[in-house]
Amino acid sequence: MTIINKIIDGKMYARKLLEEIYPLSKGFLDNFNRKPSLTVIQVGDNPASRIYVKNKILTAKKNGIESKEILLASDVSEDELIHHISILNKNENVDGILVQLPLPKHISEKKIINIIDSSKDVDGFHPINLGKLFMGDSKFIPCTPLGCLYILKHEIGDIKGKNAVIVGRSNIVGKPMASLLLSSDCSVTITHSRTKNIQEHTRKADILIVAVGIPEMIDEKFIKPGAIVIDVGINRLETKTRDNISNKGVLVGDVKFEKVLKIAKKITPVPGGVGPMTIACLMHNTIKAAYINKKIDFVNVLEGIL
Ligand code: NDP
Image 1 (cartoon, helix red, strand yellow):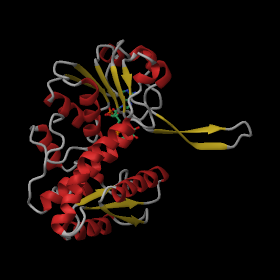
Image 2 (cartoon, protein in one colour):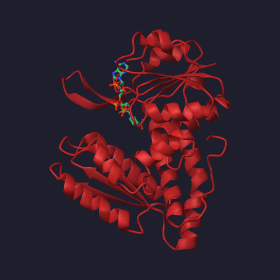
Image 3 (cartoon, protein in one colour):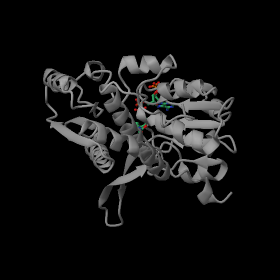
Image 4 (cartoon, helix red, strand yellow):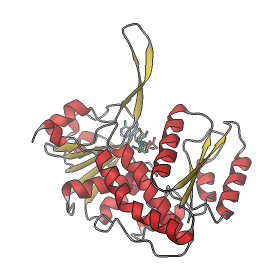
């Protein structure tokens, strides 16, 4: 297999999913005389969050979804943020609500996630949605793990019986990813910062998912030859030009791409791997929320994936 064939094209998969869901977005407009709608709240002006929010709003607009952004000052009180969410919860014309994380330290993320109406929780982080996912009866699945599963099912087909190892156990990536892989009949191992000798686990992985947030932590020594490697990490590195001008725009994953590419069967790049799939899955969840809001059945475009 040539090197180029080993690189998983996340942008292509994102386009494919968006094409699959567009007829549902169009059908909603035809039936209800309005588009499915998404409101994104951002608190403060974290530059990385600004880029993510802008991409979400733009992708929504391009795919027949009404999108609005509420930008709040970084010193907004927790009560005021809750007030904004309560208004959106009650607004029948708002289908999906997303609060961009991370939030400033004085605001409890846990509390905010709990306040969002679980039927509008398109991020899938509300305890009801995570609980449903863990019971195998999912409603909204967190977008990044869902995107990873979509890639895996298209790349491998049947993943039954595969050894899947996840590095990272966050509520938004590692844990829901484990649940999805378990439901797909993989044997799943989760590793984290307290795991002794992570390589001992990762070297047995047919499927390796890395979501840590440490630039290029996973090198070729962690990889079983022929593994499928999904790099969730997005790390913005500061580099200097020859004239000593700093450039904060270089993105790398949690995996040392060039080294791992040589021994893995397939690998997702950063950027252009999991990131675009996360946004496409958010669009999927928003359209699904619109159908749920109107109490009509949502055609499962992910049949064969879930
Ligand atoms: P968190 O910080 O919430 O979780 C990181 C996890 O990595 C924790 O479980 C932590 O373990 C584990 N960890 C930290 N250090 C080590 C180590 N040395 N060895 C093994 N495990 C370690 O991060 P997220 O899950 O939110 O995000 C992870 C990465 O994915 C980030 O780079 C983030 O930017 C990116 N991301 C990308 C998305 C996309 O769309 N592509 C979407 C979401 C996130 P412990 O629990 O023990 O502390």
